[in-house]
Length: 114
Image (cartoon, rainbow, N blue to C red; front, side, top):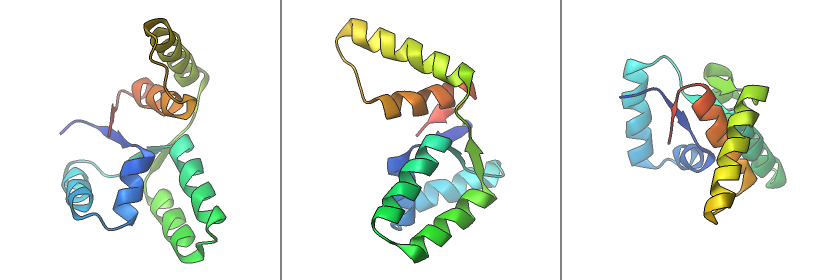
């Protein structure tokens, strides 16, 4: 299994108790010490929980994030993201900027994006 960073959708499924995702996390943690997520994913989860006023889930998420690795947005990751954006625009298939920023963080840290 290769080092991986989880996207917001995968992390949301984990917190909803999706058995397949939980099993994958457990397997991953047998090989690696922590789960990687981006600062962008951290923001997306927090903003969603605050919007829903979900205090219990909010605290669970903060505990989870404290025990794992939240990877920052850096100049290097933004540069990678800009390259991805330009390439996709040239191909006529742009995607959401937030997804591109998450991909840039994963690539900058040599991680597979799940």
